[in-house]
Length: 267
Ligand code: KIV
Ligand code: NA
Image (cartoon, rainbow, N blue to C red; front, side, top):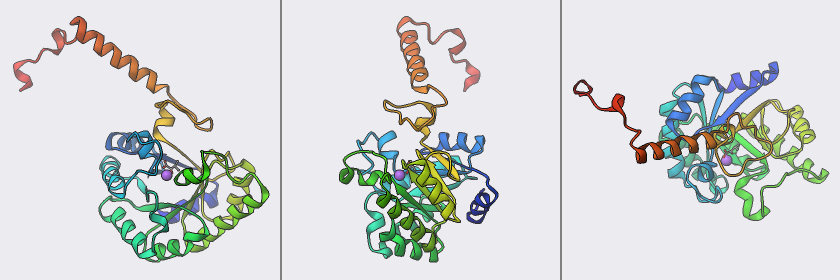
């Protein structure tokens, strides 16, 4: 299992970090067997698994429920749990209580919070308590009502400076890594070069210290696919074809056939 110091050392050595989201035990088991460095139980859970229109509906209880499943499937992978909408901005003692639940009840090793300088004090308190914190800057899906959509952030110089300042504040507060979502490649490079802690990009181009992808985007499951995500399979089509074949076989009587008839030795 990767550790916080090891992840920072990977950046220093120029070794890329491969992170993937997971929401249940079987996918986590497969990801562990395939050798991912880090798993993220993201609050994208709400959109890709629970069918909500945004991440804003996801509750702490739902996050804990799925984090437990992921940990059962991948006992040997360092796992980060997203704190859902609103939590990062509560009084630090409440954020600490939620993060302790992530670790004690969810089995997570770290938490991820969306936010910049306004949560730096909270990040410092959690870190002091022994809870590793991953930051999340750039596009913050928990801000979608304010932003009015999922658009690239940090395009203008003033905004870029603000993001760079926020990234430094999070590192100074003790964050061990930082997700950069949907920012220009040049800005992601600037931030990555300015920090000692690794940056993990999603739609942030190539000049970051690692990548994170959503499980369903990697496999090609879903109606919308972000342009920056590479689908390594077209699994949605394959699953639909498999289910359609099953339905047709039941209707025609082709399934079950002789080899699927239960035998006495099956118990
Ligand atoms: O919720 C999530 O899946 C995330 C990643 C996209 C970084 O926050
Ligand atoms: Na998230």
